[in-house]
Image (cartoon, rainbow over all chains, first blue to last red; front, side, top):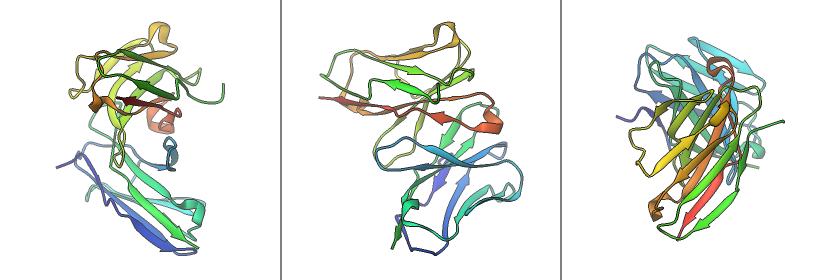
Amino acid sequence: QKEVEQNSGPLSVPEGAIASLNCTYSDRGSQSFFWYRQYSGKSPELIMSIYSNGDKEDGRFTAQLNKASQYVSLLIRDSQPSDSATYLCAVNIGNNNDMRFGAGTRLTVKP
Amino acid sequence: DTGVSQDPRHKITKRGQNVTFRCDPISEHNRLYWYRQTLGQGPEFLTYFQNEAQLEKSRLLSDRFSAERPKGSFSTLEIQRTEQGDSAMYLCASSLSFRNYGYTFGSGTRLTVV
């Protein structure tokens, strides 16, 4: 089992729709969870962090965490073509200070 | 200093040659990380420094790879005797407080081994 798993996609949604991205992780001791956005040919950019069970909202983005299910998700409301990118889920593994990344989900928002 | 700087942006080298990359983190960040990313994959952890101490190194990392962070400022990543499988984007990231801020990535160095 991979440490961090994401649906590779691609995921395609129409402009204005809600995009839902999912991630599961293997280490029950993980405490910190992040979502990064990566445009083609660019480096990852941090967009959300979440540490407690429940929802965390920031503008059009909502991160959801369920530690019992070892599940993290990212919702993008009112999706825009500029949201088209690969979204990477990152999780700290155990007591390590480094993060493990999923393979990413490629999102396309069609005008 | 507004971000993490990496140099060079691109490197093409012949198989068997040695290459060295440099990373300058955000000045107040005491933690520095190296990752490698290939097409269609997420970043793969290579190694991590806190100040000048190298605290972790991936088990997957060949002994051809070495990293340093003298004086706890910039870092270098050297690959000796490069192989075609080393072709990838090498990403550097830094952080002040892992838990609260996550990482800030540099633009990366794209290595092509021919």
